[in-house]
Length: 232
Image 1: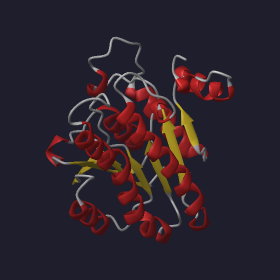
Image 2 (image 1 turned 60 degrees about the horizontal axis):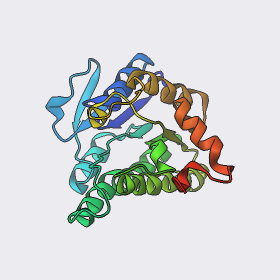
Image 3 (image 1 turned 180 degrees about the horizontal axis):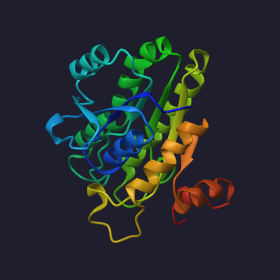
């Protein structure tokens, strides 16, 4: 897919990977809209701010009305509360994470699918995680929400193929963002992950495995004691 003059909407574009994606899409020649609950927080040069709380149906409807020429939707916005399953408020947290990490990409993809079809098919990118495939301590709820988003991505790829919409699932391990600031581990640069996602769009690839950890986890699916089983 040629991104020159493509019209791209990126959710959660005010920081982290969303900001890096916006910068990369602008550099590729696209017209870029950056969605955020507070559009004033979008400060990337060349990015047009859009008020978009991805959990608000009214904001989604307004975005669809404002962007009739959209050709690429990047569902990037996400949250992670790192709440253990034994926490007293785990059910409320689960609803919150599923609302942002699963129901929002579903709602946005559903709302923009007719627009993409009218504009030749275009593409949808769902930002997922290596935690779509496994869980670490205190990530069970986040992992569940990303696993659901992964299944959704695969379903969208099949169901939207007829209208020529290319669907990309992007998986990555730790990135150097606000979400992982408290973790003392090796982290990928958001700009590097963004570059791999933009390259996948341009090359028509269905999946991004953005770092070595993610690639090794997927390679290990068929191992007798695959990593997703935990320490048995």
